Length: 389
Ligand SMILES: Nc1ncnc2c1ncn2[C@@H]1O[C@H](COP(=O)(O)OP(=O)(O)OP(=O)(O)O)[C@@H](O)[C@H]1O
Ligand SMILES: [Mg+2]
Image (tube, rainbow, N blue to C red; front, side, top):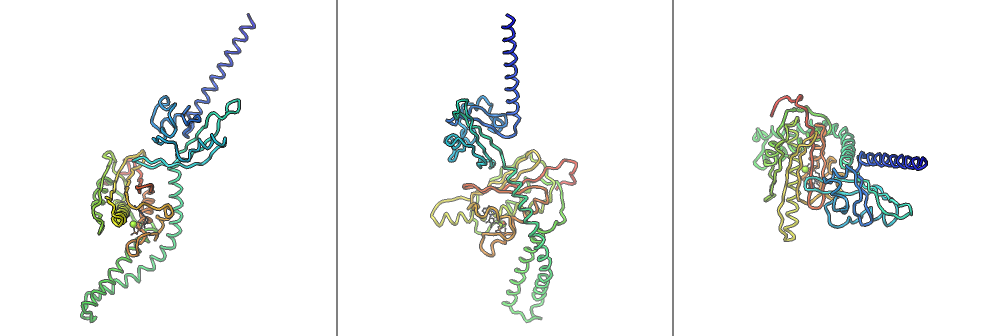
């Protein structure tokens, strides 16, 4: 009898220990900040952690038994290069597989690792999938590389721009002089028109030099509290591109967006640059399509959104897209794919600089038919409010 009691208490002790271990493992599983999903060889989900359930937006109970691609990508068929299947086939782990998830609102990047799980008889029964959202990391690294690159280019360009300002003022000053007294300098109508061209070209060069200086040094900014929604409507409706034809513009503005502490004239410049690029892109696409005899309507969708600590502005177009070969270069000064005279290639580098001065971020995604530029500006606390625009 005593022996039986002993046996029973040993068993109870063991079972309690197992339960505690199970709880501990479950807590670790749920506390991990990476999404975890375990699938069987039909890619049906057998277990997920809280992070995963939170991301896909369903209760854990509702997720179990569903296919992994259904839950994560809302897609009926399995992913073309599914790392879980590779692990089932090879019995080996797959690391650092990259995936892109495109929602109407945003594009996010994921890094996936898969590991095999064997039962005690050595049969591969499950694959455990670790899914890390690397979107912010990816954008921060890109921003850092760009900032460093721009900083070194900036030092050089500052010198050039500074030196060019004096001769440029000389050219425009003299041209203005000539135009003021054409008879004194023996200028006929043809001569006046030529001097006019000199003046226009000098003015254009001066604008380029100003942009260059902006790239290389911090200018005096006038920061105020700004209604970004109003600024977006005003600026975007003011941009007209010659020969663009009809472009559909759609605003999806977040009414709850608080005023943002920024320099409105600089932010205006950024929005103008990005929207002009979008318009140029849809115009080029229209020309391509009409050359092929196809119908096409250019569309630009502008949105604003209040996020936890930032105001997010997005400007999306259905134009020609950005070729993967040039994605790393579009923020570089003087990088342009536009015909000579139509683009200096300074728009995005200046915009990057301005957003950086505002402690914000500018980045883009170009997938399939959509190119979307996103601009994030920090939402300051009310204490910094100085005056309203
Ligand atoms: N929405 C877009 N769609 C397609 N390509 C784009 C888009 N935005 C930017 N680009 C690419 O990025 C390049 C650099 O843009 P950026 O605005 O810096 O210079 P640019 O438009 O060529 O000249 P500018 O100095 O007159 O703005 C463009 O030449 C184009 O190739
Ligand atoms: Mg541009």
